[in-house]
Image 1 (cartoon, rainbow, N blue to C red):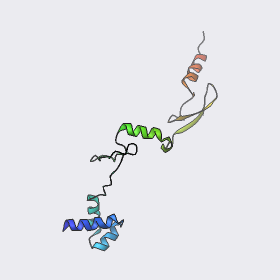
Image 2: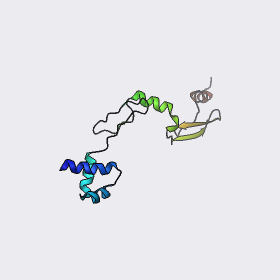
Image 3: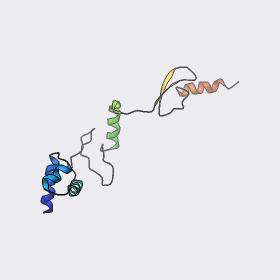
Image 4: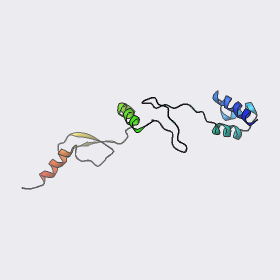
Length: 126
């Protein structure tokens, strides 16, 4: 009985019906439908976007997107447009006066290490 009930619910769920609609069609309570759907999630085979290898889920961990760190870094390096950079700051160098951008650091004064060193040398007297 239980397997027939869950198969019926999962059949309707695979058709894209919601919990309430399935409950009215089958006559089971909404909570029963929710429980069956949670216990039997749709197991689509996930693939690594870089190499296409099958991803195996780890219990009690976040869902993987890549099969390895090497694939993750290769994919992000080849898709820089997908990076959501929110912390880009625009400054003018205190030494050379050129505009420059800094990512993640809102306290920069100099555009490069060379400008920083040059500014430090100005204050030293021979």
